[in-house]
Amino acid sequence: MVRRLVEVSAGVHVATSRRYVTTSTVLLDGRGGAVVVDPAWDPDELAAIPADLAELGVSCVAGLATHEHYDHVMWHPDLGDVPRWSSQGTVTHLGQERERLLAPLSEYLTADLIDIAGRLEPLPSGSLPWDGPPTRCIQHDAHAPAHLAVLVEDAGVLVAGDMLSDVELPMPEGSDQALDTYLTGLESLRDAVAASRILIPGHGTPTDRPMARFDSDRRYLDDLLSGRPSDDPRILDPDNAALHAANLARADVSSGRR
Ligand SMILES: [Zn+2]
Image (cartoon, rainbow, N blue to C red; front, side, top):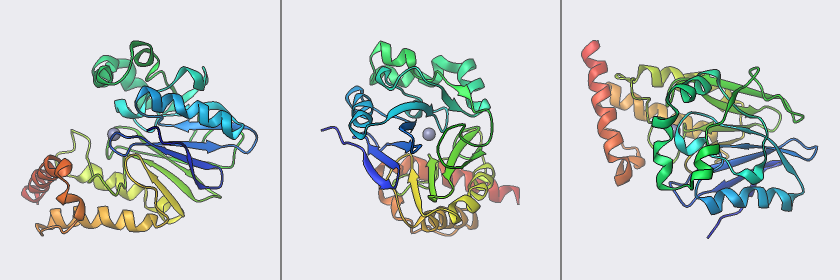
């Protein structure tokens, strides 16, 4: 079954993939245009997004990839040949390591869809250059280098990318050996989370209690860094076992440094 777009706030729609509860977010500019953030995942799900946009009577005017991971840089030809933005760091890294970063897509996508994945250009400023309401883009290195979150300011909608998930534990970027880069990145989102009424994670469920997500991640990390057992329910998910073990090892590195 292909899940269709669901409106989570006025002018903000989310589709959820059958794979890893991955979200695709559509931001409407109120003038007939739509920016599609992180469209995912299977070919039928990718094709459903432009079909849903047509039903809404809008057309895609741009894309945005929150970060360089393969499951966030997909596209569909029916979305059109429009600008697809990301951070300068993401664009540069994909240019240097396209093959390695996109290799996992061969398991899911056809050759034509792989070819158009990751064709990004840098955002010209710290906000979306669109006809819609004011936005603020926040860049950090917590989960991936030069990762972007987008806050639609008046609506109070925060598109968080792979941060602040209810299903996935904090997943630091590979070179973050002691959780310090992650904590810095998480804290860089605090003001945007506090200013938001709806938070959309890259994997998981949109929530109308954004600060509770932030507090959960902060508490999980603080427990690990203090050597306390965490009662975070996400630990019980077998899909998070390896990640939790890696985070415990990172916390050990951190305490060894103190
Ligand atoms: Zn990711």
